[in-house]
Length: 489
Image 1 (cartoon, rainbow, N blue to C red):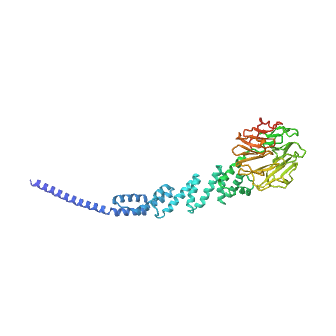
Image 2: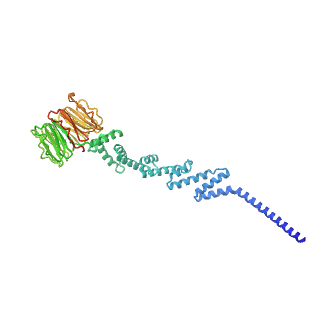
Image 3: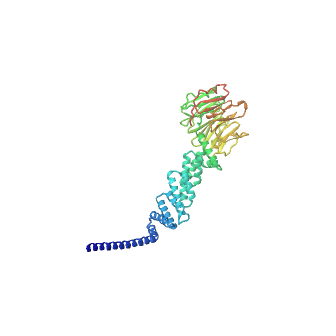
């Protein structure tokens, strides 16, 4: 019994000690918990500060979110600071989207505005690399004097001009190159395009033509020049009572009256251009020499000594040749001695008893004493006994007639004694007829690429190489329905 009692007392003492220890430990745990709870905010703020000091902004931001959720309080400055530096890091890595997301609510905080400018600057650089020059230019223009935006903006515009040119928008390219001034080779490119757009041979003439024009007008000139330069030259001509045409193989076809031998051209070859006087025919050969057949009483066929000829023109009883050096030779009735002194000629035409020339400065000259000679800047011209007609780069036609035609998009003209024919940019042709008895109907043709206006008859060349003739056919001069002529320049 005594033994059992002793054992029981020991057990009770152990239980009491255990309870006491547990109570002490519990009290300590409670005290520690209370301490931890009471000091957690302060300790957390310290951790946040240390994380920010060590540039661990993402971890600091995560801890800030926990603190704000637990304490129902906001750490505005710390949170903004983390967002700011996270945005800066994103910018270093080129992630402007992430940077903008971080900066969107930081208006006015530290150098947020500067970082947003850097976002735009980086985006513009990416657009440049991608070839989106218009979008890049818009951003650089907005950035203005930020870093080297002004300089890179010029590069963007320079590339925009190049793209515009490649797309066929030459007027738009010209406008940009002009505005860029001396940047890179902008001046040289502008000059080249000005010459190309206007068809002028002299840069001063080109800019004179373009002076005061808006972009739409310049683009129109560009398109008309392209269309004009695509037309064949010297492929169709009419005399008083005969018609001649140049075939693709360099031979010549003729129809009509042959009383003076004007149609004796069957042996010709290697011909690149033809023209017809009243009763003679002239051909320009590949080697720059000239052949002629037909009436020669006035010496109009005395061309065998000519060399280095690049263009020919025939009047009623005379023949003219434009040489490589820009001078003019002539032979025949009223042989055009007044043209012999001219230099830098780029275009020559003739009709009836007169000739017309245009030099590299765009000045138009004519041999007929009663005709206008003026600085027109014409793209081409033609002449007949009673008038001069000048084709302007803008598609209008100026004449010495009482009234000018109302054409707005002409790309070629032919002056006959009874009518003036114009080819229009849409492929159609129209005629101004001086005597209603000579009226012709061109309304059914939309693929005309050359025209020859004469006296009693005229002809047009269609894009399929066929020829349609109008007017008198007394001598078979309109028997051209089986012809196939050269259709490319």
